[in-house]
Length: 412
Image (cartoon, rainbow, N blue to C red; front, side, top):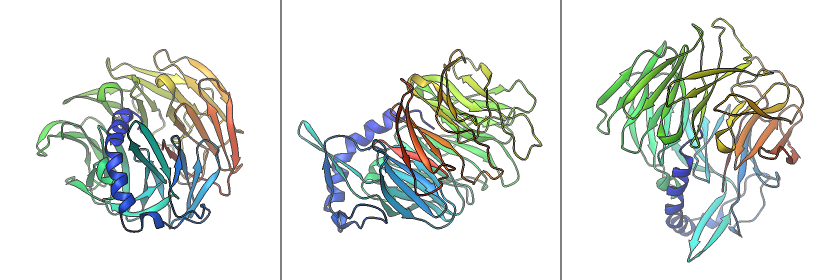
């Protein structure tokens, strides 16, 4: 999910000075041991500007790169299959492990001193902060808070960015009536939007007020999966036959043009009222390689289905500058679309052609967009490529030591 990030970043900026003071003065804060492959420095290094970084998972660990030079900063070992989600606070990444969410500090400290900002970098470190329990699922930054949903227990953790920056594993909690593969979104007024279902089936969403009393419900969303936010805080949730749009406490169902038209993954943008979603129509397929995607206007409920000149995977969809829709095709190109007209406005060749693997956990190319730059990881070539989405020019390329699986980043 990409929308509402500006608001969250602003809140982070206001609390980061105090969090630096607490962290820098805490026991051992300047004695952090660099992870394998990281610089040996034990003290923060002052920088003059932001330090964006990338995190790439592989079977057995996480690579951390400088997003500008693409130089590897650290190689952090992990156990088992993991997933990566940015906390969208400029500094942390949530690492989904078998027993819950763990917090990776990407190594950026920010301190405001008078009229001048001083920026400090430290070695990336896997912290002791943990949330949730068995089978961690979705991570949703929205409205200056971060909501974690644990599939195995139905537990919802609402994390305040200020506490996270201070190094506190503190959260408020809610537990869904039954565990399921779900998602929850905490909103600025204290309300909570959460999926409804159980281990066998999922049917829709429920809106709860700050006291967790039900306000509204919609059970017309079979197989509800995934969420995002568009401009003005409008939320969407995917269904096997369309999408749910949440405006305030009103829920609208928008049907797909096909009887089975599954929108399981969506990406929003604070710059656009239109949500980008994937689109699958073969209910019985073990692996469907879609070549169509959806653009849904959250103001009108109008859904546009657009044909792509290649197929793509669930790790292939992103948003670019001005809310543009960005899709990494199996032809190895980034396809950039106008979200209003659905017209392709740019095609950028990046990597070689590829095929989506049978297992979704396997390594495959994926894309992450940060500050107008698209980062494409190619596990076959063991490389990462940076492309400017405005100019279409390649900004850099680097070889990796591993075949990577997932990719995210922090702005620093």
